[in-house]
Amino acid sequence: MTISVAQAQLFFLAFTRIMAIIIHVPVFGGQNIPMQVRIGLGFLLALVLIPWQPIPADAVTVGAVGYSLAIGKEIIIGTLIGFAADLAFGTIQMAGSAMATGSGFESGRIFNPALGESGSAFDQLFVMTATMVFLVIDGHHLVLIAIQKTFEALPLNSSLPFNGMDAVMKTAPVFIASGIHLALPVMAALIMTDLTLGLLARVAPQVQVYFLGLPVKVVVALLSMGMLFAVVIPFLSTLYQSVPENMLLFIKR
Image (cartoon, rainbow, N blue to C red; front, side):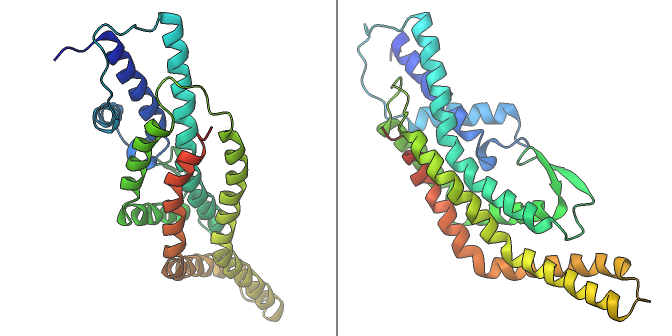
């Protein structure tokens, strides 16, 4: 089997697009995954997912300047596609951060290697649980299928999908609103807890409400999050299943 220079160039372009996509999916390219593993996964996916087309052995290769521009375009396209997956996980992280506000966990922030950002133990627990739901519903399989379909929707070395920016501007606010709606039950429970503690401070001034409120709000936050997951798993499934559709929508012509 003879591999021409043109075939090698196409393979590296596909590898570039795939790497630009998977670094935005915490399950595939999170900060806690070693760089060697991420590169190896991108290489393997490039071998498996590309719809290879027969190329003549004497096919014309792309010059250095044109190939550099092609690599830049694939990085932009891959980043745009990966942004769709990043929006879903960003929605979960935003909901966790909103729920953690006022829960007592915000006083101690730790680094989350999966998302590459710091956060409280509460929102990290929420993000990890939501990520488990993503794996249970085979969301990672849906993402891989969507990556393969991007090569059919937008072949390698194609022009930039400028029309896809309209979809990004319309979809991003929807994900942000979804994150706020997801966090509202826990936020409402914490607000009611603060109101109750405030009334208790007025009725019984001798009670140390500050020291009583810290453990109470922690318990309320954990209980409300547990009850929330009992009813929002279908919502999370719908959110994750929309990721492949948005990945293709963002690169429409």
